[in-house]
Amino acid sequence: MNRPKKISIVFSVFNENESLDLLFQEIQRLFKESEDDYEVIFIDDGSTDSSAKTINTFINENSHGKHSLKLIRFSRNFGHEAAMIAGIDHAKGDAVICMDADLQHPVSMIPAMVGKFRDGFEIVTMTRKINYGNTTWQSFLSKSFYQLFNFLSKEKISDNSSDFFLVSGKVAEILRTEYREKTRFLRSIIQILGFNHTSLEFHAPKRQAGKTKYSPVRLMILSTEALTSFSKAPLYLGIWFGFIFAFLSILLGVYTLGVYFFGETPPSGYTTIVLFVTISFSILFFLIGIIGIYMGYLFEEQKARPIYIVREIIESRLTPAYHITK
Image (cartoon, rainbow, N blue to C red; front, top):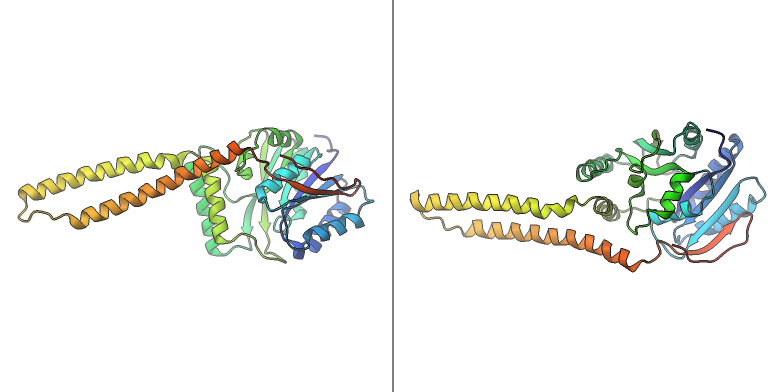
């Protein structure tokens, strides 16, 4: 493949002001060491710190270089997935790279990703080989999530995949026009699109500044959204539990009749009945919750609200613009 005209890099930013100076140094190093033409897009996902101001200063100080710099500010926090979609929507490059601004997605890996793109691959996913920022417990939970996801979903994804990836302009256009659902799991979507696809491994370093924005509760919510937005398997739990409890009920009935006719003491059954009813109702409420989640997705899609709202766009070569976009 010929040298691409421009590579777009999308950084998702949410309260990362402490990490930005280090990120800017990595970006400047990339500019010096690479001959490619880059478009760098910062998506400020409703940050409440000085992230937007710091990025704006960086853009003003580097507005006369050959590389295009852009800051897109959301009107509020719409989430990481929306930030990536917004970056892809506004990218103009022959290839688009999505990554986080916390430096746990190494900027130094970008030339290798672009090299794979030149080799003819239209999707390059990045797989964490080692995550130095994770505890043993976090690594176990992450591995368990991918195993559960691949068990429940027809489409399989790589273990330790990440929101650090490259897609060609053709794939980016498909994501802009076809995959516009409100609840999405982008790292999985890009792995089921087809096209020439390859993967690279990277080591995720510890955070050099700032704190993670994902609490255990938030991670649990995101995991649930990923599983239910990509698989209908949880809806079949009602059928599975129905068969299991029907079978157990038959066994219990046979046992009760046997004791009644052939045992010395007729069974009272009170404890067994209470336990059986308690478990049954627990599972019933669990299944109602699952159905509620899917109904909630339908409700959100039916409202057809925008995935994100842009408050402001600041570019190194253009004046600010204000608009609402889907």
